[in-house]
Image (tube, rainbow, N blue to C red; front, side, top):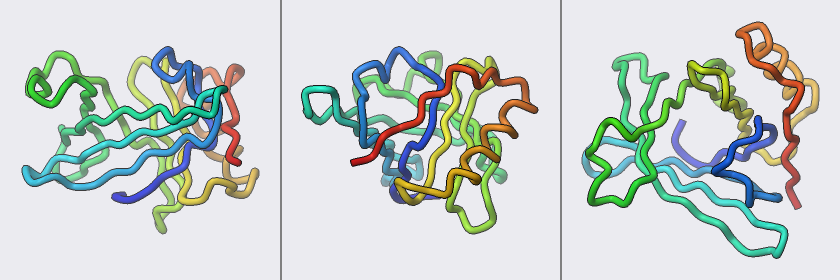
Length: 144
């Protein structure tokens, strides 16, 4: 799962309101075994927006449910200010993933390529619908 993922679709999220295009996430292991999350996008003024956080696995050995914090590094240990990050569907080759959380407010389709086949993206969105996600407000992410 580590490496670069490109956002290809998402439900609107207040913390991504500045993201206009080229949205990506890079995941790397840090020295304590948690995952460094480096989220990047560009706004309408062509300015890079970046947010670095840390993800903590909450269900080993399955490792498909994480808690993520984007607080400053010195206070990330506070467990109450972490968002859910659940891997809901992923293909066996780790090329496409559906990420959501229990309230069904947030949803992302990520891909190893910025321009995956539309049929694949639609398959993942339709699967999200079967899980109770409202996909009528999905934003298709632009990659330039």
